[in-house]
Length: 259
Length: 318
Ligand SMILES: Nc1ncnc2c1ncn2[C@@H]1O[C@H](COP(=O)(O)OP(=O)(O)O)[C@@H](O)[C@H]1O
Ligand SMILES: [Mg+2]
Image 1 (cartoon, each protein chain N blue to C red):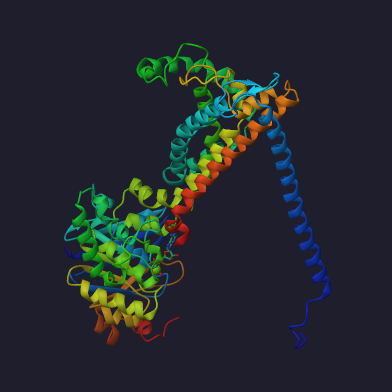
Image 2: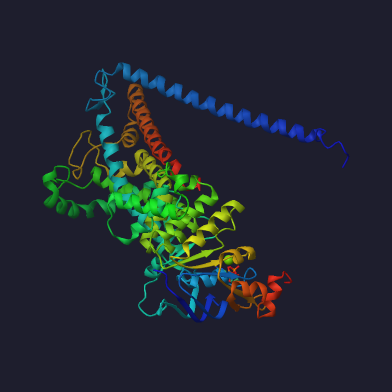
């Protein structure tokens, strides 16, 4: 179930290029934390260090520690595959498996666990997670049709259902609404609100209204200049960040007075 | 620019268009006409032979097309062609998919690139070279393997072996497998490389191991590509002439024991008989060639059907 995240002195590299530097951040369980900042400041990179997806990129390398309820994800002997089963992720572009039905998409991760379920248990899992993603009513009559036939917003909710079906402790979302229309965006935001009682949620967004709407805490990232690594400037309660930030850079960015 | 932009473009462009469309239409019609002429010619010759045939074209087990009256049938050829090509497919497709996966998803780049080159290079080796290599190198070395197979699987009948030189349909199948391996590998590799990154990442983020990523994202996405590549290979195996003619010890019979020498295939039979054949003999060979052509068509049609059935789930729908 929902776990706390403690990041201490984290650096991440792409080959020789240091993309983020010295990030220390604490995230409470059952909360929503938003990452904001100009593009290229390393929000996605940082997010992907939280489920060890960063090292999938050729040359990707991480220094420092990420503790999930006091267990270091980068400790010796920790299997990245196991980490990714506990820390789920939703991507910027909806990416359901095009070769699978809606039903099989929801179960894609579940089937990796090697546990054998009965047909009715699987049906229940599918229904529960599709309901959890507010998608059940729309797709219950076409569960065995391809997931790629859904609209973008429906596909993204299908990806959410797929991510929750493995019962992760943490859900990471990288600009999950940036490819969606406003109505689908609202649907996802409602969903985040409902899900925060069960998961620790971290969401990257370029949309500050969205950060204000969905998150309790907001972390502002910035980079000193082109080619410089991104840094965490400040993290605080969301209303504090948007009304009275401690840092000048944050205020400039919030108010749109930014390069 | 004058305001009348909707006016016709300069007439030179029009003329160019007209010439080009005339040329391409002409070329298309000429192509169709030539193909129709070939088909009519071949069919007419084949019909002459089949009319004169005293045997049954489908079930007779001999090929005496030059005799008077001619007696010939394609049963032996069909068996030899299908058996050797099936062996080739069974051996080549899994290996090719394995190599393609290794190159596209497992090997480090500095290894993957040279392996890819070697595979592409193998595809360019002329088939007579494969034939000579098969006859001189492969045949003597396979007797041992066949004796071993006979010892353990001889009871099946299909894998029994009498110690004759290994110039059998099995040897042909193995050689064909090696010959079609590069083309299947290189096409499948291209398809696997096109797996959407987003889908591979989705699988990884769900906690998939490398092999599970391959199973969830790469193989399903590449499925129709693998089928097409295999059909390409099968087409080559069905029609392969020189290599088969060099390796196979030609005997016009059906020997269910695939390891023992003897047998014949459509293409090999045409190549080895055509020179000595009289007019009726040639017409009979043409008839057998048409059957091979039909066989290839059927195989391709079947492949298309399989691909079409899964179109809804193809990566292209994403
Ligand atoms: N796959 C990659 N290879 C090399 N550099 C990358 C890669 N992805 C991102 N970067 C670099 O890392 C930095 C941070 O990028 P990113 O994390 O995508 O920022 P954000 O998500 O905040 O826009 C940028 O300088 C970017 O150029
Ligand atoms: Mg990003």
